[in-house]
Image (cartoon, rainbow over all chains, first blue to last red; front, top):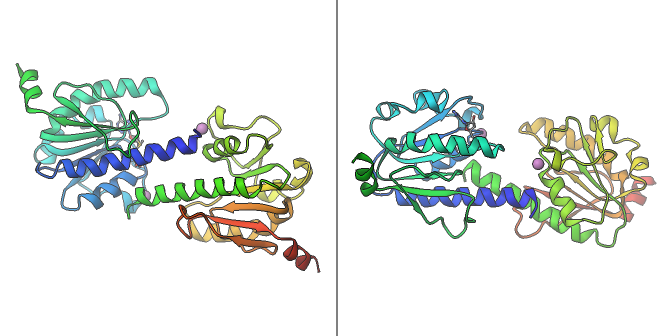
Length: 171
Length: 171
Ligand SMILES: C[S@@+](CC[C@H](N)C(=O)[O-])C[C@H]1O[C@@H](n2cnc3c(N)ncnc32)[C@H](O)[C@@H]1O
Ligand code: NI
Ligand code: NI
């Protein structure tokens, strides 16, 4: 498989997981959180598949086309480590969906980021809410969900915040 | 259609055209020319679908992963305007296939580039050889070919160098 093939598969998995996530949060109230704006492609996709939701984007170094950049008040600039704690207040309540496409080419850095990001974002999520991510997350309170058939296994991940796991975590 | 959808369609069209081009040049001897290395994804694809061909890459500012960067002697660094005239000598003969993925987000600049690039690369191509490009090219000696069904019209282009048009251009 060429790098072009691999890149296409990754994007197809990403889109399939975003589309599935939008369906899964149908009954869950709350805004959407996009972690990492990048060039704004998935932000644009999210606002098309969830037009009725507020979308908050967290990004250290915004550099997307102006048309794919959120309006002031919906873009939170800074490192996740500083902007995510306490973010629920800004969101006006827990999120229905968090999309965390945060990886870079550095596998070690990705694993480290995923390890501290998981526990930081689970409390931002409504009960029954969904996280979809390019990283495998293993935080307390997250139940892995099967990815859609169009998504190759191991390219993108889906999790639902469980009530049971939340009680266990609080005990 | 979101920017994510659009990006995926563009990559599917690109891959379909590269794969089709590889079949179309089956009977045409000569090396492959990649105009623009970018991050090396299509270079990697070309070397997988045409493993028996020499591949020359022309790039102003090489910045791909080392594993997707051609060996010394196969990477020609510089602006196309300087590196392409006389390039046939370096190739050891006309190319069977030229892939020109050269566009940027600037439509005006793209049209200007395509206008001078076409006439510059047609003479580098063997009779019956193929150009596939992200730009519409209108040089003398190029016959547009239908793109594969998987490729949306207007996202990627295929041309064959015709003997007839070459004679016409020389008259
Ligand atoms: C893979 S890109 C996102 C691409 C985006 N989903 C798209 O489709 O265009 C990852 C983004 O996360 C941002 N990022 C990574 N780590 C971060 C951190 N610790 N704090 C803030 N932003 C971060 C990067 O700057 C980058 O823009
Ligand atoms: Ni954009
Ligand atoms: Ni590469």
